[in-house]
View 1 (cartoon, rainbow over the protein chains, first blue to last red):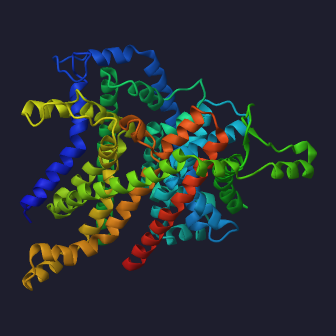
View 2 (view 1 turned 180 degrees about the vertical axis):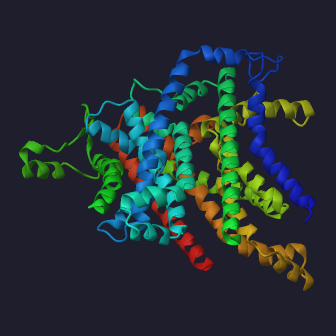
Amino acid sequence: MRLSWFNTISLTLGFAFLYLPMVILVIYSFNESKLVTVWAGFSTKWYGELLKNEEFLDAAWVTIRVAAMSSTLATVLGTLAAYVLVRAGRFAGRTLFSGMIYAPLVMPEVITGLSLLLLFIGLDIDRGVMTIVLAHTTFSMCYVSVVVSSRLASFDTSLEEAALDLGASPFTAFFLVTLPIIAPAVIAGWLLAFTLSLDDLVIASFTTGPSATTLPIKIFSAVRLGVSPEINALSTLMIVVVTVGVIVASLVTKRAAVARAREELAVERS
Amino acid sequence: MYRRLLIAVPYLWLLLLFLVPFGIVLKISLSDLALARPPYLPQIDVSKGWEGFANFLSGLDFENYVWLTGDDLYWKAYLSSLRIAAISTVLTLLVGYPLAYGMARAPREWQPTLVMLVILPFWTSFLIRVYAWIGILSTEGYLNQFLMSVGIIDIPLKILNTNTAVYIGIVYTYLPFMVLPIYAALERLDGSLLEAAEDLGSSRAGAFWLITWPLSRPGVVAGCFLVFIPVIGEFVIPSLLGGSGTLMIGKVLWEEFFSNRDWPVASAVAIVLLLILVIPIVLFQRNEDRAREAER
């Protein structure tokens, strides 16, 4: 099938709209001039400045720590929650449980942030890295459980039952049978939780204290004063990291899918 | 035994960190502002037992909600958030539908790559994607430089810090949420239906309105809700791209809390916002359920 002129134009314009702003951002991060909108020759000096800026480096370190801790915790809790939703059958308060899984997905961030801050103040907890981790874990575990539960719902329970019949404990059956099968969804959930945490400005602003500033909070306060070449350089680095990450992840899952298809084909033939 | 423990861990986590905080917001929204820390009254006096609880209950009232209806700022902000969300949803649909249509009509082997290209920006920082537009739309920005060098305009346009900039920012950042459900609906469309319509004498445009549009409608509805619902409570876009004239309730709540330090009013603003959101969320759920049944 060939593309009509209409479709060619809508694809070109659509993708230009999606990518041009980021391309411009990347190009101007190599601008010599301090004035961001005037091109004054190629230079990588803003990257050097960025690496010397300790405030940004500290904020980046805090952000990565928060993202690593909260996404791991969220993956464990979210997988558990998905397992409960799909496999535990009926129990008292099930409706409330599934409501609490789906509600944070549509809750405006300002409300989630406000309510968690009021909780931490009510319990008199010192705010900092740990409170951001708790907040991020809570909303990203819901995303993880949605991703994992769709995978859990679609796979054949007879495999688990066979393991149980052959004498495995439910615990062993989960780790030997269920977990390897849902692993791609669990990994995807972890990646999603990690990026959600890296990205979050609003909830982190509410739940942090003076001791911990994350990168988005730092960027937000810098950006409010206008465009700066350092922020352009930082944005470029983040865009590169994410792009490489997504491409690698998609290649890995593609290879896994090809390998699985080959295995199934071999089983059919034998 | 195992099963109970399995259920209890995520259950208790969500109770403590989702439901209880929400209850606290509700409670504070019914309290009075006090010049103390925490800055609201009454508080439950646990040492007095039931009597303390009764005193606490009698101290609650709807004063903050009455205050919200009395001050123009709040209901104007709610209305303006709804209007901005509605207009930007329509704009996102106008930009997103042709893109989704083009993707669904592209050669099969391109399609996974095109889908990935739509998702990729979603993984990069939201803040950075909004920030990218500041440089483009400002008075000395790239757009004005371009338009002036081509000779379309003589005086730079003021776009940044207006509602126009907010619309552009919303369309840009929420576009994947609109494109993906529409693409999913169009991709399943059976091409032979269109051929049949054309064989029977229908024009291309006629075939589109009679077949493609109705069959893609569940995707369009889902996409519209996925944009409309989160935009109502949006904070980052109006505060970076909008100006002093841009009223959105997410920004009002933020300022009420961080600048005015009026926690009871901020909490009441949050509760009313949630009540407003319940309507589109329920409609969205119903649309999803209907689509799922239609698939069976």
